[in-house]
Length: 447
Image (cartoon, rainbow, N blue to C red; front, side, top):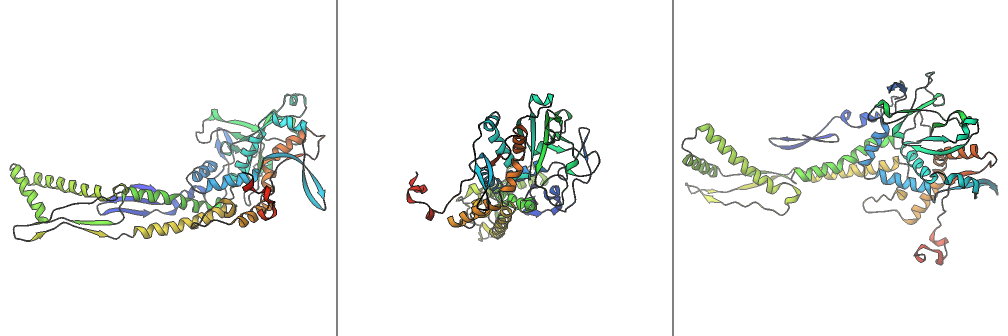
């Protein structure tokens, strides 16, 4: 028996059947969409009480496994990350011009020199990836040696994988993120105590408290006290259905034929075979004779099945010889197809897949025009993409930027208190319609 998603394919004497399993056996039980809180009670890991992330305290890896089998999700999230990143990080000040708040991009040699001492661009990319997938970022702050004498200085920042981080349960049992004082890092797949490290939560108002600390920057999820959850969390059932369809079709192509067949073999053919066996082996008992006949039938059945079944056998044919028995009757082989409506089943699954693709795209929070989704061979026009991009830049970028770059901007404030008002942001070039661009400056003339 082979299991694919909620379907189990079972070989029986009558053929292969697909049985849809109960919903509770699916991966969605792991995600637990019923609304029960995971963070009601702590779980013990390496002797520490931690706030569970997901029903089995392994939600980040479950989302990873789900997305890796999906044909749309990774591409959409990569596109969303690229749109957020734009042309990359740059320093700016905020000024008011004509009653409008405007980002004024600046150069500051001292801050830039500090940024260049560590991979700040790589940090920004990693933080955006974490945010688009899980709505939050775990950041490790490494302090300079001056922290030992009370001089605050953030030497570098590191974006930690969310899968390797858990919040330690608050000592006062408050179930409030602000009361979390430590974060546990390590491999939560193996649960080996030697792989874990416990860090204090970074206090941006008292940065000299420790030489290394971790802080969780996140977008608060409604109804959740601790961890943020993915924006596409509600689309998990659709993702599962979309993931199952290619594997089901592959299995059908490999193991089934387009329609089942009934093969009629002449009884006189088997009577002759039996007579030949009796002549060659007069010492055979009836049981031995029947066993040999069963072997011949199995061999013939396997030969026919090998010829007719499977995608690699297209164009093959089965040949046989019709003959006349002793009574003068024609004995013929006959193969009759039994319509199984596999095409209708696949067509129905394809329609479900299209609905799943649409629901999945909506869940990821990116317009299909920007996600490069092609439905029924149709793609969006350039003007649709342009307006979708303007709406995305106007409404969907600032919160992501605030959360992903909060650690860097806190570090700039701590390291350079005299440079108040300078922040690190993401520069995104404004894209104009072709009608508003001179002919010489259009992309077709820049190649």
